[in-house]
Length: 262
Image 1 (tube, rainbow, N blue to C red):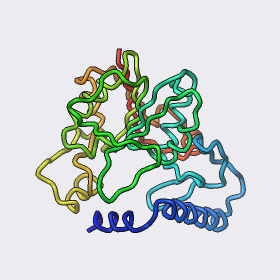
Image 2: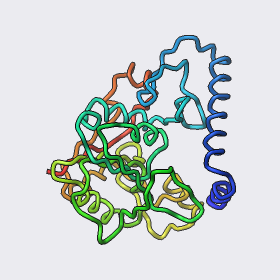
Image 3: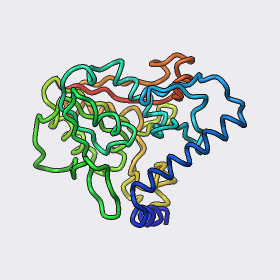
Image 4: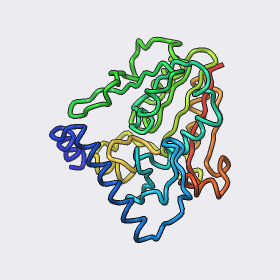
């Protein structure tokens, strides 16, 4: 039912309206939370917008940035891209799979990048204007095309993630880099998957969302290693100190995987 409602809303509401309404809603939530919380000092910072805020917007379980709606993981990943990679320094051909709006708006204007946002086009959905139709499970995928890949919260939607991860490896040039993130189970629990669960309601119960097919543990790194990657697991607890996590609005347990093809 949840899936049907989402498809109906996306089918009959123009994309521009949806973006406008989301921005309007964020603005209203921001003002109300600043006023009721007596937030005076701008002690929070979004590295994507490069702006200081009086608060991050509490929206359910999320903490959003005002202007582009960046979530916790977006701020963490962007900070890492800025400080721990050369993505914004060297000239690079970048593949951005299932592009997040907040990243897309910034990456498309980077002069050093050849930017290729891509997603698998599905009926009933629409996509950001530069996005091209792309299937990460394509058996005839072209090899060694990109210097850098960003792929966030995609693999948990794909049943045959072995092929998807292998294709990420194939797509990268030698010495290329991929930054990948997925939802991670707490307490270092191992990856949980059960392909017999196909009902959207049951998938939400077991995997956290109606269109997810598994819940990864940090042992996902072994799947990357099996595909040929050198893997660095980065978690927000070690990456930020407590002051930094509060300032950037990032939880203690957030993970990304820095993959290299040697």
